[in-house]
View 1 (cartoon, helix red, strand yellow):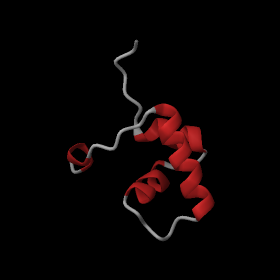
View 2: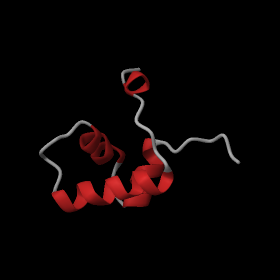
View 3: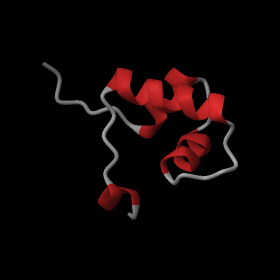
Length: 58
C-alpha cells in the first residue's frame, strides 16, 4: 500500500478541471456548475481524497 495521499492537483486532473475549480468546490462556492461539482466530488471519492482544513490554510 502506498503512503502517498491524493492531492488537490490529482483531483483536478481526474475531474478534468483546474486546481482552482477544485478549491472552489471545497469552499462551497456557488460559482461552480452542479455538473462540475459532481465530477469533482466523484474524483475525490475515486482517489480517496481527504480535505484537511489545517493544511488548506497554510
